[in-house]
Image (tube, rainbow, N blue to C red; front, side, top):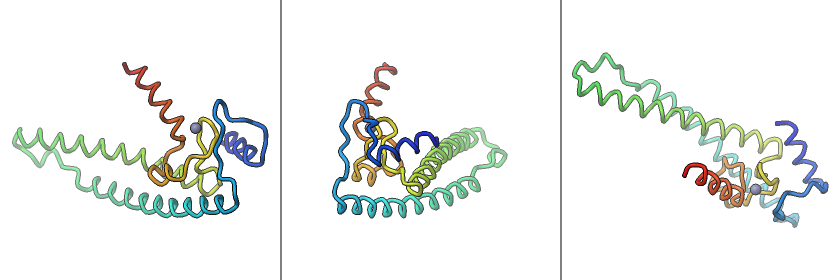
Length: 153
Ligand SMILES: [Zn+2]
């Protein structure tokens, strides 16, 4: 989304594009800004490690996928099928996480990391440390979850 990135940069340089509804709480002092950047670099290290681990585990799961023909007994076959489905699902989840990690790393590199996709405000550093791949601030995330609940019910 190159358009979005451009917009974020303009916001940073003091343009008047105000975030809707909410007033952004931004790291203001130079000390706060450099502290945030330092912690983002720590997050980057964690993300790189997590990515490597995921890739290793994905390779491992692929190699240990049970061979259906190796279980002639029906009971065992059913169990194998469940295991296989579980692993396939796990890989799907891991793949999605991997994509999120890659996006986060990309954002760290181009300086758009930690900015909420919805309101354009900075995401709290503590939230980023707990959920490094998040692209939404806690307020927007909560709002979205409320909406999802309404749709599901
Ligand atoms: Zn937000």
